[in-house]
Image 1: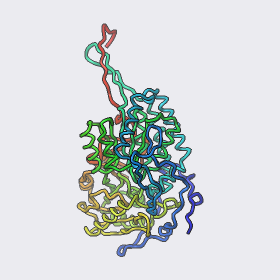
Image 2: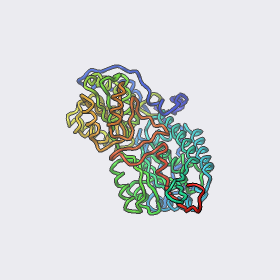
Image 3: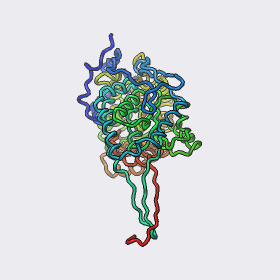
Length: 540
């Protein structure tokens, strides 16, 4: 079959927001019998067809340094792949230490000598607003590029571009509201605090949400008047380079935003170790986050913001509306192919509703439509790459070998690309790897609990603390759990709500610092106290 174009299959006109696209209830209540693992529905299987040709061309594959798109110093490139087929989309310039040096030098000059930090806050705000308008104008093209490079559904990508626009308008609004204080002191002194930009910010974003992480990091850094060197994940460089060009069109001065694409051991390590980088922000795995922190400390002790892994509990209480809880737990786990740091990957269900929940959760997973993410109605696309695909299948194998019951899925989907069947395990115990490790894939582990004290203890028995979900109709139970669970975000009767003003970050080994909202601004500011003697003051 000839490859088809997307325009005849999917229209974004009915997608109004990130939340509406993915946090809707399906109203599906069917169940499947226990025993032999059922096959996936005909609807799901039919979605796997000849890949649709994306309606977008790849126009930016070089490094963005000092306002220009340039080749890497070595001339090296690396392929970025279509996860639907494992075929090469484009070859992207590979940044190494020399390129990092060029980008940091450009950012330093822009901060020390350029017009950006000397612009009025209102002028900076206007540039960010113009950028948001350009993103909105190019929504369809950006979303198509993101889906092609990443594998997430086109419908989801449309929602993420809308959130990107919202986030930059939010931070543009903050640019002229950042100010210090006057502080009373004992004695005849005038004391004021200045909130100053920190300087050159090094930022490293992951592959699971390239556009959102671009906004979460670049937005507050620019609002505070900093310059930036941003490294994309090697799996997904294309959308950041595209929107970086839109910033140039919006009038951002050269060198303020530099974008490089490369690998962690080379470009990433060079950025973290660079003596002229004043601050780091990293989103990724906990293991890599520890390396980032060590490199920062060993160089110039630059401050670091980390948003790392998670193994979030999703707690379904005995009073839950089971149908709604099943759908919410399904979204909490399977959203973005399960490649979400705050995924509700430990589904704790009260013993009184456990059996009913399990049957309906299994049925919902079997009904999940897997296939080409450009096709309308598809809920789940491919995993990001071969490495992640193999890792997920190995965890599924571990779950079976450790004694958990495989209720649905458990295998690859189709014969090409990196598709994994939506997978559900029951009878999961806390000591199993699938209940301890961050799988980062479409694998739901369902665990049984008896009472609140037990589930609190078990939910907190992890090195992670990024998020948690609570599903209950009892406000007293909700209040008890929200205060007892050690996590940076608690979703009550909802999940994956990422408004621009809501801070996001983790406890324990899920990171340090917060992104989004007012709390993110402190990551990119220095606070300076200025003390001046007063002679014969009229008042103190």
